[in-house]
Image 1 (cartoon, protein in one colour):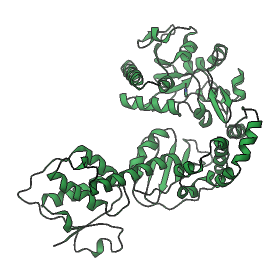
Image 2 (cartoon, rainbow, N blue to C red; image 1 turned 60 degrees about the vertical axis):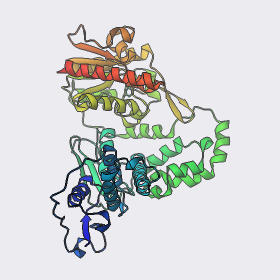
Image 3 (cartoon, rainbow, N blue to C red; image 1 turned 180 degrees about the vertical axis):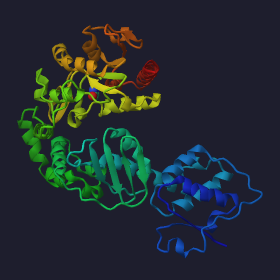
Image 4 (tube, rainbow, N blue to C red; image 1 turned 120 degrees about the horizontal axis):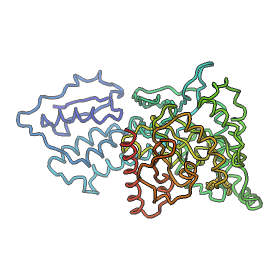
Length: 484
Ligand code: URA
């Protein structure tokens, strides 16, 4: 007798697990189950039924090693229709040999590991190659910026990868559509469906921006064509606006290297100048009422209080609720913040977000800002190397921070790093001397001092880094308690 069982098979481990548990409890051996997906040509309709057999009275539930569940979680996302049978066979074998996964040359183990690797690679490619396009808000409607992207993954990874996009693009609304399901985020809820989506028409002027960006970061002196096509396989090119540049960039690489050698190292970046122009062309927004944070932000857009604005793309003003109880102050926007116009969205922001999540602080409840509102850097070749703002620049920019403090009136102000501490106190103290304890400020507020997340990212020694991360986490937990 043969059993046939059809699953939707869209990366849902529980769906397969329920069926597998049913077969296992009835003692059904792997060879007599014909696993299908509902998308198969004859679909479910060709089956007599899709019911599970009755459990055997002698069935004793057994636990499986967590490493198998982890592996199965990745394998189930693979698009190979044989994955269900493979996993059931492995599950069945594990009941008799708990060390099955340690047998690196076992055919089933090899096949499962290969599928899991392919799923992980697909996940990584999706995080790297999704290109968002902004959808303009209807005229007269205010709200969060909205973005849409189209991606074609090889496997059913949308649900798996969606939390990454939630963390990374937390401050905008977005929808990622794919033929294998879609994910969307609206600032509070992450929604995932496994229904196939149609490719939307996404051609717009941001394509040109991507191309400009790509050609600005393309370094012909470091060109390795084989490596490049391995990292950015051609199958992804059709949905990458910058990809059409690749053949000509490769063809001209040699000439560009010679040309680069002749030029000064500090060429201005094409990309940020384009954004700078775009920012300058934003039509005058209706003026926010005087004395509000919105008015202050608008005013800061044209800040020229020190020279840093000359090279920066735009003012990166503070961000968060106007009645936030806790305000975090960093140093200055980094490369990614300068392009995005939002604080803490780059690597330091990611570490910051992860730590907040670990200790259970909701980033959306915080007001995040910087001591200095423009990105200070030194152009080196095509890169923009962060430069610490000097005391004069910090003092000039304190003009904005003081007003942010007055308008938001946070109960707790967290200085992350020495620049923030200097901006808030005008004193040059050693961070370690004041770190980790609440300090009463003259204006009645409480200040808490901790390190800057970028400092943690730069620690080369892994052991020390782990220790410092743990201390940072402790500081964050203390901040959570103080805020409460
Ligand atoms: N570092 C900061 O101090 N602020 C940011 O916004 C990003 C990195």
